[in-house]
Structure formats: C-alpha cells, structure tokens
Image (cartoon, rainbow, N blue to C red):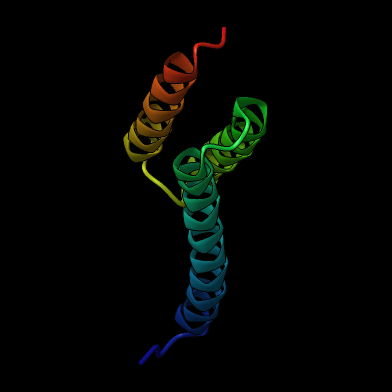
Length: 94
C-alpha cells in the first residue's frame, strides 16, 4: 500500500489510466471484429473499407496514447489491411 501522498496520488492515477486503456482496447477489438465480420459476410467493399478506416484510426490513436506498443499497432493494421486487400482483389474491384 502507498505510504506517501505522491504514491497515493500515483495509485489513483494508475486506476484511472487502467480503466481508460481497457475501454480503448475493447473498442479496438470491436472495430477489428467488425471489419473481419464484414469480410466474412461478403458485404460491399466500400462498407468494409469504411470500417477499416475507422479501425485503423482507432489503432493509430491507441498507439499515440501509449495504450498499444507502436509495433503492435502497426502489425494489427497491416494484418487487417492485408485481409481487406485480398477480399478486394477477390471481388475484382479496383
């Protein structure tokens, strides 16, 4: 348990940050799942690209806020983009 005033404050800040980070990570997972679900269902590629753009934005924001490691964010963006590109190519759209 924290003894000093500053340590107690730091403990409070850690709890707040943990809650924010958990919410942000949950949102990231939901966005990625929406993209993958859209690909599985064979939705219009334009709709999937909009979802991809949203997911990429959330991943970049999490990276800049230090919720995710920069390389982890880049890896997740890359994997999603690769799947979207493959689906786009399979449908034969430019």
